Length: 144
Image (cartoon, rainbow, N blue to C red; front, side, top):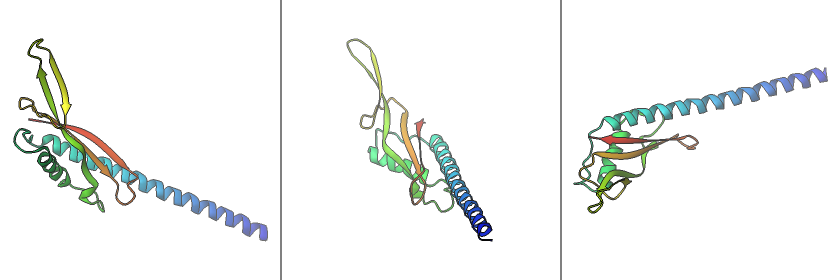
């Protein structure tokens, strides 16, 4: 009788451990799906947004305008709008032509803004609430 009780106890313990692992894994998969869906939505909305001209406002103002756009997207239940944000600085595409050689140099710069260029790179990050165990990022090219 004692052996039967011990065996049943071991079987119940193993079943409960498996159930707990399944519940944790399901929650993790749900959070990944939520983060990815929110990031995709924000990237699509930002891509469709009107380009903020870099020649007039300061870069911080441009970053805040883009942040307002992405944080206004629909977020998953129990995820605060602050779980999505812009990472780093908004970068501007620049084209410089050497006057003597006529060679072009093209590059991204967070501080140098070429009025003739209409490309900006914005990197968006989504983090899961509380423990931040899920972090997803994507770079979006905003153009005119």
